[in-house]
Image (cartoon, rainbow, N blue to C red; front, side):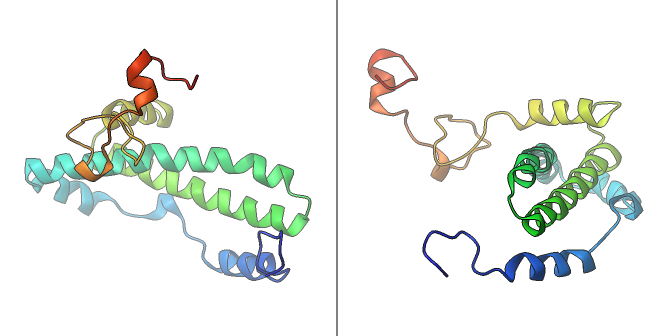
Length: 160
């Protein structure tokens, strides 16, 4: 890999685009009826944990698809732009399948994908990450930490 380059070689975009072109799937063709029947049979605690996980994917896949768009538009290489387009299209499929799971399996509130995304956001609650300051029971203890000292001293959330 040459210094100052993100991609390992000029062959990478072509290689990746060939793989992605062969790995197409139809999110609307997947039969979720068996999953919906199984969902109703899950123990409450397991269903609650899976709901938290799945609503996170419901929200995240939309965000990834949306936020990939400017990268393709900014690419100064048409093959790289094509690869980013293919990746965004795949992320849109992920968003569709997780929306279908939210609607058809989980019964998440909302008549439209946007309404279900909003319901998923409300259900997901705070983001759990290494920078979380929440004590939410949904966040594992390893992801919780105290707010930085400079925020506690002044009550401010911005650096001085």
